[in-house]
Length: 68
Image (cartoon, rainbow, N blue to C red):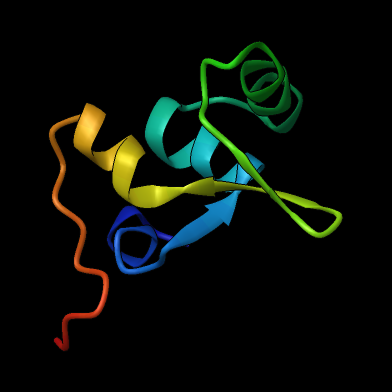
């Protein structure tokens, strides 16, 4: 997944968020999520990262719901 693709989705996985936005490996991304450094939500049994708030904190614009 690329950063541009991530910005079109409402949520992404913790490892993808860690890698794309912070350059973190899988375990480091989950550690950051556990400490609250990466905001997460629990959906059923999955933990996902909401893209819009994360992108906003980093000064990026999402394209959720927009057509190319």
